[in-house]
Image (cartoon, rainbow, N blue to C red; front, side, top):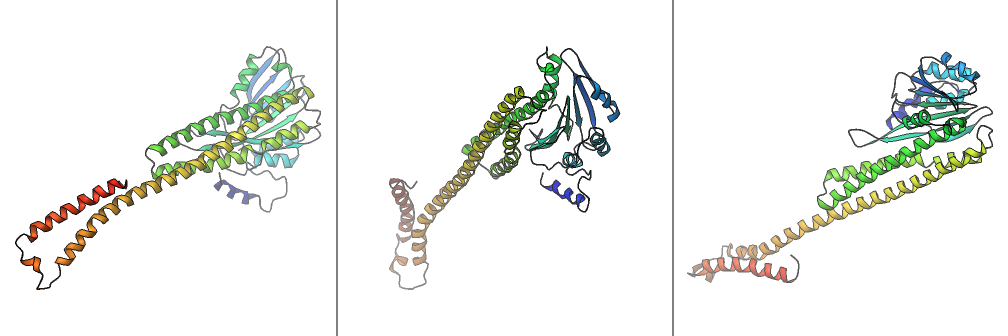
Length: 354
């Protein structure tokens, strides 16, 4: 995520509104799908070009255009040309390092946020930028990659008996935003499970790999927080908006998303505190283990100090040492060598040092 910022240098020297993809290219080809619906009918199809989208502007229906993959810059430019989208907005769609935000224009609204999910097959969090253009009876969503994030929305549209499909483009935008935010709960549950596993490992047999996992979770939480926290500003901007594209009866649904974002933010902060606590526990555990090792080494050193002292005395080369000529001197020395460690061990046990 951090390394991809190097591609920003491609914009140096270009005029504002220049369409250049910035960030990691997750999909080289763009897949375009259209869902056009009203209360009674629904049509779903895949298209190849912008010209196939234009006829839906004249219909009295809600049209959702989902574009997965930002590799086709000409397509993005054509959408801006035919739907009168400002070049700076198109530039933001292609710049995948945007901070979540809402921008209001006369004929449309533009909001951008991050889709976040746990990576498959390895520990890590994957991010993609999702841009939403809200027009009159038209909604464009721009995603970096092809996945099943919006599959629940499509199922709801297909199964709707009238309520969903009788609403306008603002309600569709609410459902899309709500689906993205709900995926954060799934990620948070997965992170909680990972933290629980690390805590269990920490209390049983911590290793250097445990420390690596703690640092990885801590780093990912920083990125997750950076993506989620600005959503509160985005939702507040929607709730304060006076755009005619947002009906009063739909704002209550966006208020519900705002509550969800607040819960997610609090959960992330709580998880960050837990991870910080795990790091403290790891350091304390390593210190305790080191203390135990030092205690054992100190016991051995304490036992051998008097033995070394005795052998040092009788290792001197003085001629007139009376014990050297004594018949029982050597056996008595061994008795002394055995008695001293036993007495010291009993003493250490009595003092609860062992």
